Image (tube, rainbow, N blue to C red; front, side, top):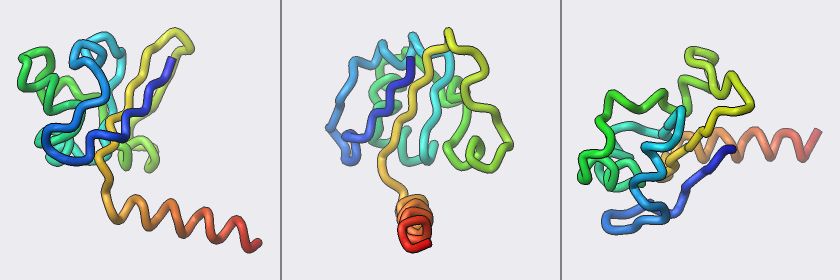
Length: 101
């Protein structure tokens, strides 16, 4: 199973119970410092359920091949996306390029 949470893009917002992150085999964030402040991760940190060191990787590390994503179909993976401008721009540029090829 994979869950992507992308609605906690400001302080106080929360989509998932913080315990969901603890159940995941791999938690990935778009930007650790940002997610620790106001993403789903922030609620798990505040509850003492996770520590920042429990985060498997930042999204860029997986995309760049520095860390593997899911390695087993039985793994529960979760991605906490709070919105990072340069990543949004890179995704848009890729989509634009593919649409106009």
